[in-house]
Amino acid sequence: MFNHHLLTQQQKADYKRFREYVKEYVEPFASEWDKQQGVPRSVIEKCAEAGFVGGIIPKEYGGGGWDTVTFGLLNEAFGAASSSLCGLFTVQTMVAMTISRWGSEEQKKQWLEPMAKGKVIGSFAMTEPKVGSDIQSIETTFTPQGENYLLNGTKRWITYSGLADIFLVFGKNEDKSMACIIPSNAPGVKVIPIRDMLGFRGAYLSQLEFTDCLITPSDLVGKPGLVIAYVAPYGLHYGRVSTAWSSTGLHRACVETASSYASERRQFGEPIMEHGLIRELLTDMVVEMEAARSLCLSGSIADDAHMPDAMEKILMAKYYASRAASRAAANTIQAMGAAGCHEENRAAEYYRNAKIMEIIEGTNQVLQRVLGKSFARKYKKKS
Image 1 (cartoon, rainbow, N blue to C red):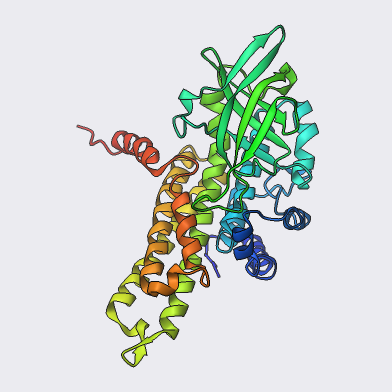
Image 2: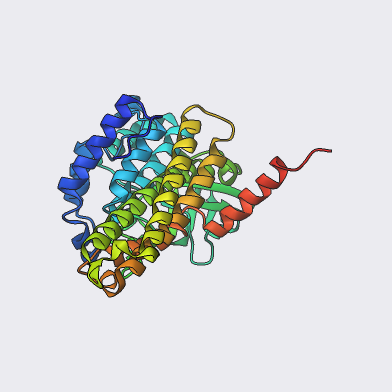
């Protein structure tokens, strides 16, 4: 158990509850969801009943009012068993918290309580076929039509868009960035499922096509022109919290799988755990896991305290934890050999999902660019 001294008693109790729930309701079925390429809606409804889907949504809107640390612990617990289900917590929180911070009072009343109860699933529609982490280059358009707008464009690789009830869509009106909420069944919306992804196969990724969708001023989120600078980063921040913590959960699953196999598998008359190379692999995996956990916890505590460097700490956590999880997954395959490459063991699934962690919510190369620039300023020796 992750029983860190910086956790409160309530946070420890919540984490214990998350782990117990995952053991009973997620671990036995996660591989099947991956093969079927979809987490059943009934599973999501059960998570919602347990308070997990809307845990971080403010209490005044029907949510649990969790702090960032507790939300992170949820992602760690679920991330060890199902990256696809964890992806739901990621995008649901990104959309809900963006509405909570930047939406109108009418939008908050209309959407947040149903989202907190899991009756409405939201999807964060930003990535496009030609545009990923470079959100300044979004090509989706909002064209004025009287007081309203016509939305046109294509979004791709959008997590849970195949199951979502609403989309938070980002685009531009000439040089002004804009965002809106649009129901998935609105006229002009087409959802095309994307199957056989490398990882996150149960997370309902789709391509969204918007053709002359009517958007009214009441559908807009945030002030036009300020969306890319303020609204989008706010949602992405929660996505990075979720991805960082779920990466540590996936990392833990790799450590547990590799350790169990190395203790049971025998070569030359003894468990392979006794071989120096295997010990080296496990040592690196565990040390990096603890380092990733510390970064996640530090960033989440800073976020809860509204520290000015909280966003940078979360970026660091996402960057390091996702890289570490990817290395751990590769080392697990290496330790297990051919056994780790077959579907009878989940190591191959971990390997596929871990690579996705390095790409989503800002690729690690983009985060290197952002963090490197910040670090150069921060640590420049003053004359």
